[in-house]
Length: 159
Image (cartoon, rainbow, N blue to C red):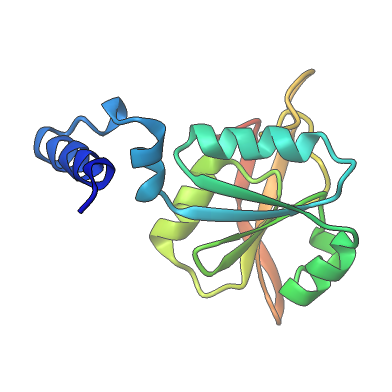
């Protein structure tokens, strides 16, 4: 085992034993983090703001710039009426648009029978769309049979 691997293992053992996860360097926190693969267009700025919020929430984010984001949405099963600017793959689910990190955590905890979770459009004040007065918006679970409500949010807080 290399010295670097030994140092990393020691840091992880210490953190687990003491509960000091927040003190670990970024590489160690990211190793155990849920991976988020974000598909976005090359011209979208708010997508980067959303990925930053997901990183702040502890997710390991990979961004893929797509020449044809609509083709990606279609391939992943995102209904047109629920579309937004970016599409993410997270632990077996599709997350469409500016879904708050708390809602993603709830989705992953509850594990509902669905393809994914969407925040249609680009709601003002949602994560990545901050600035101005936040609006109340709905999140929807979706699958091949349609969509159903998953809650209302204002900014990044449930209503």
